[in-house]
Length: 224
Ligand code: 5RP
Image 1 (cartoon, rainbow, N blue to C red):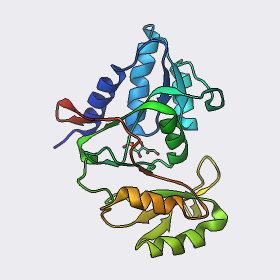
Image 2 (image 1 turned 45 degrees about the vertical axis):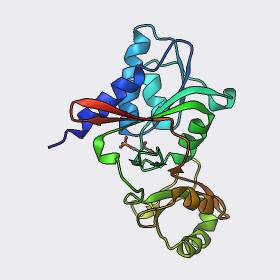
Image 3 (image 1 turned 180 degrees about the horizontal axis):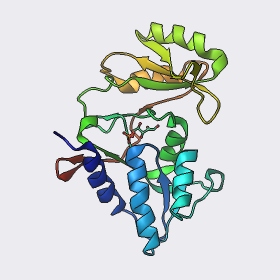
Image 4 (image 1 turned 90 degrees about the vertical axis):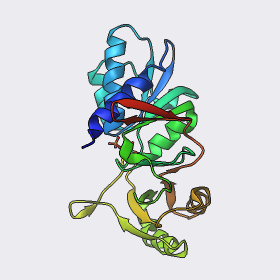
C-alpha cells in the first residue's frame, strides 16, 4: 500500500531545496504545505534567511510557532517562490486547489509569486481534472444565483457545510463545491466562473504553477 504521507514528505524535502537566502517565500496551506513549513522551520533554525508570507491563519500560526519570520501580504509586491499543495494536478500543471478552503489567499499569493511549486503525493495526479469538485468562493448573498449559473455550465453545486451551518471562509464567504464531471477544457471553465457575479474566486489554477513535485514511492518526480 502507498504511504501517501511519506510521499508528501519526500516532495516537501525536495521543494525546500529550492530556497535560498534573501527570498520572500509564500507558505501554502494544507497537510503537504504544513510538512514543507516544518522543513523550512528547521532550515531557518540552521540559518536560512527567508521571510514567509502565509496563506491562512493556520499557516501563520504554524510558521510563528517555528520562528519563521513573516511579512504581511500588504507589505509585499512580489514573492520569489511559493510552496503549496493541490487537490489534483495534470501534466500541464493545471490544478484544483481549495480543499482546505483557503483558495482565495492561495491564489493571490501564487499570482504574486515568480515560482509556484506544488508538492503532492501520487494520488493527486490525474489525466483530466474534475473528480475532485471545484471549490468556488461566493459572497453569501449570491449563493442561489451562482447555483443557477453553475447549471448553465452543466454543473451542480453543494454549499460546503461546517456542521449544520455553511462553512465560512477566512473572508466570511461561502464555498460551493462545484461538480462539472471530468473537465476537458479547464481554462474555459475557469473563464466562465470568473464571469459569474458573486463569485469571489475559484479553485481552478490554470497557467499559474511552475513546477509540481510529486512524491512517488521512495522518490520525488518533478513536472514542469
Ligand atoms: C487548501 C489547499 C490544499 O493545498 C489542498 O487541499 C491539498 O491539501 P493536502 O496537502 O492536505 O492534501 O488547496 O486550500
